[in-house]
Image 1 (cartoon, rainbow, N blue to C red):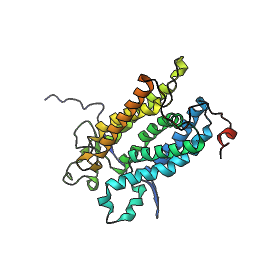
Image 2: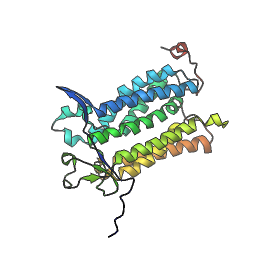
Image 3: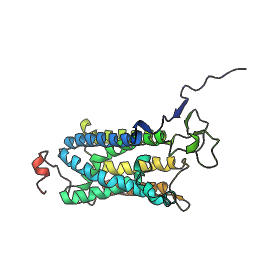
Image 4: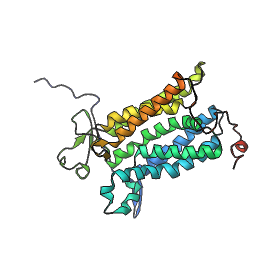
Length: 295
């Protein structure tokens, strides 16, 4: 009998567990480390992009504080609202963010609100900031998705594909306790996000090739459209989607992202108009004095 070789790309993903190091009550978790790393890398990248656009990089540092304070709690609140049944008996667990359970759409909504307020107080262009943050945001999402891998959560439907994710019995959905392997949706989204990151960086630096610089707001709108498309598809594979009645709430929000992003790009390039903003986009001096003149 002819034996066919196993596919060279066959791989089984198995989480080593959510904890990196534990000493008594002290535990360092992969989830927290990945979020912290994503924030640090994102701030550094956005600062470098700000310098390229002649924007004071210290503004990014100030904005990052606002985003962390608002976006992460909003991401947790968003998740808890749609999963309230599991927290109703133990409300205190709603604050246990280190155990996982945050929603990126909640973080984006919170981040946008924080950035709008920040832009208004600092009297700077919201869309200019959004373009600087967009590549860092999608890169951070690509990094953060691996937290789902270590926590053995947010996986897809059962699969026997050459690439598959092993889920421990205690993490398997009810009725599927005997099924060991599932779609590694964390990996699908991480790869998709990295592809979007590459596109955004290419678009950001397109002026190096002598091409006209894109209109302010373009990068963030492209992020909305591309991430919305990928998330809509990937969410359809998951077994643990946050639900709003019969609807997967992430797919609803993804469609809204696609619509908003497409409408914004149409407004910019078809109608040839500027996006509504706090102030007109402008080049901001890199001196720290100018960045704090209104404080």
